[in-house]
Image (cartoon, rainbow, N blue to C red; front, side):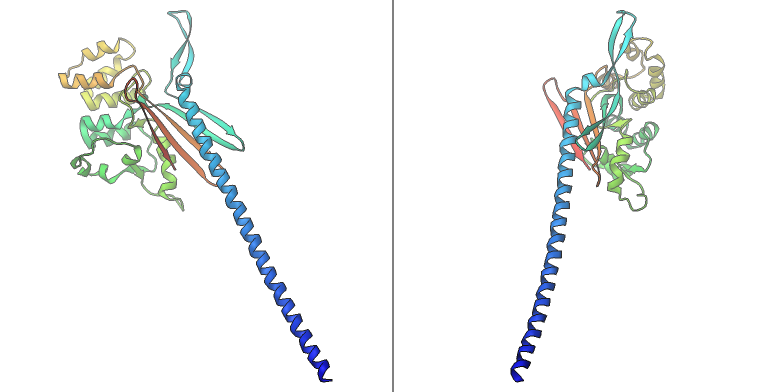
Length: 296
């Protein structure tokens, strides 16, 4: 009888041990499955991010290589009695690469109000006034160094990006300022820039030309330039302005029928997040080209 009871105890112990082992294996299996799933999701996210980055880079490169053709449109010329290519300030198009879609916008920066030109000519007060007149700021506000006199006390005299000039005023809902900033800057950058060293008056809106001319030569001369644009040659317009030699030199430096910078905005939503990128091409000299890139 004692031997049978011992066997029964051993059998119960083995049953408990077996059930415990099965439970442990089950927990490990669930943990491994969860780890494998998380790893697979992370791998998929990394793949999407990589596709997004390479896709944006491909769009930017294609736009810059072909910017002269893309920033032009055919038009009939009565003088030559033929179709000619006429420059335009902006073009936009959508691109699909694999399973991802990219919205591309190519701009001529020389068709916009250059904030560095305004700031160097008339300082902080005129800069804020001019920017408000030409740009759709929406949720954007001026950065503290621009909103106060402190910037004029620093040695920095140029804005290297619009993010140095503007910031998000008040985020909406759960969105952070860093999530809202690129979209807001993209809208504002349709009219203002901090790149390039010329204002192509043939492409710029009249309000942009007026604000730029007012910052350098005053309201009266700015009105004269806007009224006569397209009617007589720009050189003749400038020679008739009532300005001193220093201001005339500045006006002739900025007001030119050439474009010195182009930019490409690329917006991509890969199913998880919206990615923004901005690349700028600046023709510094005849042989030197500088590129700036920003990602959000």
